[in-house]
Length: 172
Image 1 (cartoon, rainbow, N blue to C red):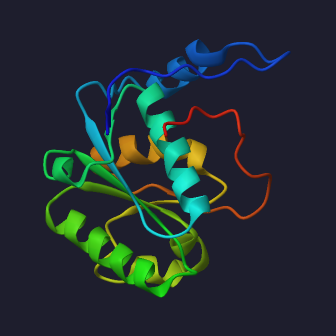
Image 2 (cartoon, one colour):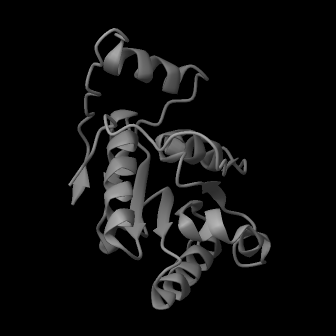
Image 3 (cartoon, rainbow, N blue to C red):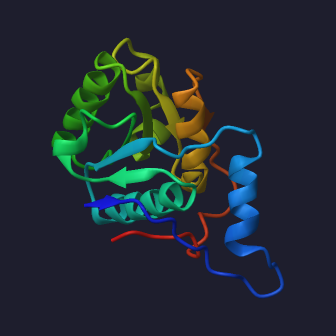
């Protein structure tokens, strides 16, 4: 599916701001994502699928066109590849997808438990150019994609703190 419409963040009691505040934060650097397409691909478990839905929602809310269709991968500007360490075939397919995206010159962001648990893997030649978002930083996927599109490498792999809010936008 392809998503072009911005989503709205749920407003939290007492916090205010909702979509407008986060949209302003995302655009605070002066870099705008309009016209940029992000292909989101998921390997692994149901939890990874859910995280990908949240990341797709975050990206759409920041103005990116988001697609999950493999047929759109070639025209996409960036790829977000989410992975699982529990399933070996998924991890192998993940590695091939990252290498392919980098070979094609895409801005690649890897997410999920593979980069979180196997940080040394991210230094291998096939993955060295990819940006990284850990399991507790999925709300920062927009920052990672923006940095990657600018030719920068972004890394957020902290292990402390709470899991991401369930109030993130989500695309199913």
